[in-house]
Length: 264
Image (cartoon, helix red, strand yellow):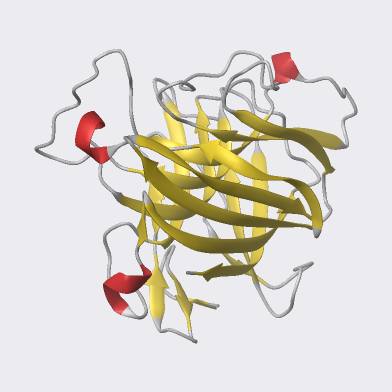
């Protein structure tokens, strides 16, 4: 990829331009950009850094949508990710946490499949908060760590659905947690997903497979996402990478991404 503008990057293969979504109150002395040092595959990789939150900010976000839920896509609408369409999507990317990465005190997402709410549609089930990151990779926060080594960060792969909305333990005691693992700071790791979604009488159920460094961790049917007809959400999904956290008054987190691929 090539740098283009303040936070924009360009994929020369498809001529697609990607711009970061940055929330108000997000501080980053080092702006998100392509760098050329210590990448997984030279000549460049994407660096995203967060500094301590601005006072009063509830959350901070620097996220890139690499497969949009609404913008034009290579090949047109037939490539759009649509919940419940029973088609297979394969996603692969390399990610490295910086050596000085501070464990966040609360939520931190680096990968997500995003299901937006849809303007004008009504959520018919008021006890459910639908949409958002319906599949994500999250760093385990400080209070839920099991491995206390300063050189390691723990993470979870988690799905959201009507029966799995919130996290408490950040392990399989939470209904949506599919896997918990750990990685060393300063080392590249390959993350691969195979995703499929089928509408089974209003339940969005389908195959979710996850490989870490080409080693299978799980591959099974999972309920993930929300029925657009009931919950006032869009049927169109997006694939995003970056950093999205709850407010952190003192932490610095830098993450790198490379070799980003999606096969639809």
